[in-house]
Image 1 (cartoon, rainbow, N blue to C red):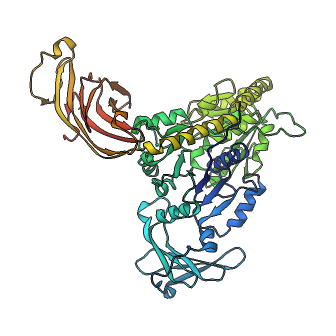
Image 2 (cartoon, rainbow, N blue to C red):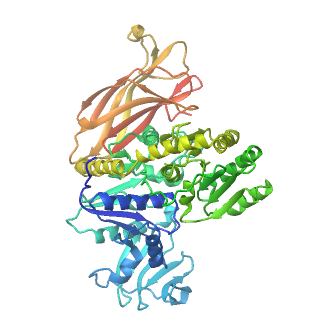
Length: 606
């Protein structure tokens, strides 16, 4: 494959923090930047948006672990303005003296005065950040990543003498200002974020030279995890902003299709799976231990490690000398230790804590186990396969099915089936020949998911973002005004003989269909795209199953209006009829009618 050269520009990856013991999402972000730097011909920079008293120490720990190359900057917003100030802004007033409200003085790791915390009455705590000489440079109220109502606040920018030199009205303004200060006016920039918490602060950025890219790492819906399942409020904010992104990237096509079913397949949606960088094998390879199973995971509820422990109780009944090593740290540690003790597994199941070299255990394990409730595209399974370790995993949304062929590189087990999970482990632990065969297959599969393909996909995403920037669209308002909604005969030969009111819904009798006609009025704008690029779709969505059935739709455009006509057959179950408009990066939709218990009603009818 020919080398891939990425488009030139600044490559900025934004996160609130990059801890040295970070999980898969942060490790994937750092891996992407390493591949971009090593093979893409660009110089990525990592930006952290949250205050960190130990910023320098974190950076050095990441470098020691090989996660952050020596020539890859890890910048921090607070450190930037602490040393560089706010430019040539002159005083605009006096900052209030908060001394009487001082609650705490914070020091950095060297003992230097770093921050003051004030608690004014009837107000959120205010953090005042200090320069090395002790003078303040920033005052910002406490805010939450999760609760949007905390983002709007008065932020004060302070000059060297403590004078007020500027004010901002939201956390988002502060973050965007830093990016604008970093990027020259004539410079192209690709601003990445892998964090669902950062998205609302960066999207949209309207500057033509700045392209905002979001990579979704985890599942966006809650149980039962269908495409139309309820959204977590944090992901709802993300999906509501897709129209304003230059690229929205998922790790699997299944997830992209699920999001498209929910809100439309826009031109800025892409798929780039996580890559595998094949590790160098140990200098003196050791044989696989025929009774050893390994887990590398955060000890959190999402990982459902109680299932792994209970399954291993069944494994030991068949393979008494089996051993399970669990690497990782997290809030579930005490609960898992209690579970191990209650099942009498202390000699066979070991919580080994966080270990940056945990993946080395996969060279000698006979199986890697994953019992998560959900994932995005798990990096741990890829790391296991790259070391030739077969994977036994729940078949969850999303990722394992895209990585593993059941019975080839490992096993896929229906989620929650602890008995079959145990049986698959027993099969591997009893058969070194099976382990050897699956190990070779896992290595071959991992080699197919390497950096070359990854880089080529990202090159396509970024060049598409550049190409489509001038074609971006915006829908300010839309309204569908029906001129005809009535029941007609389902027999095409009799439909034209039907007579009756233009708007007539209600109880369905006999073999009927719905006749629909109306005008969709659009208030939208784009400097580079015409309305000929608009796509319209009409779908029945069944309430219980979530099944989607597309209905033929006849469309004629007249100026900024669309005349629609359709005779969609009625579904057998309760459903709603959705009309959707997609115009490049923008979407709009409305429910036309709903079918409830054998009666057709308008969406707003009781």
